[in-house]
Length: 68
Image 1: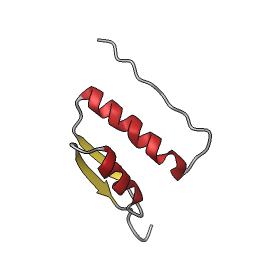
Image 2 (image 1 turned 180 degrees about the horizontal axis):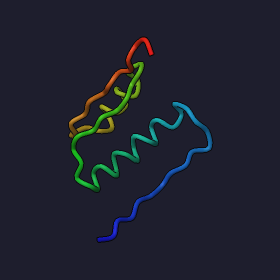
Image 3 (image 1 turned 180 degrees about the vertical axis):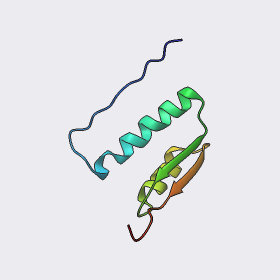
Image 4 (image 1 turned 60 degrees about the vertical axis):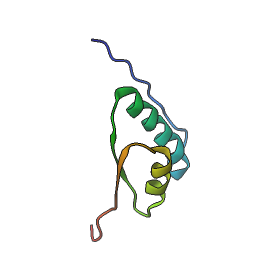
């Protein structure tokens, strides 16, 4: 069996890449038949975006731990 995957590099770091990252993850999950998705979301912004992009998937947004 041969598996090919695409790698995406961003010019800059930060939240500006969130939408594209979620879109790429959605496409890959759909291609592989993955239905369970977990995202980290400190403020809830990524979780809210993921909820729109991963419609029809089982999505869990995990908040960061306080005190580290």
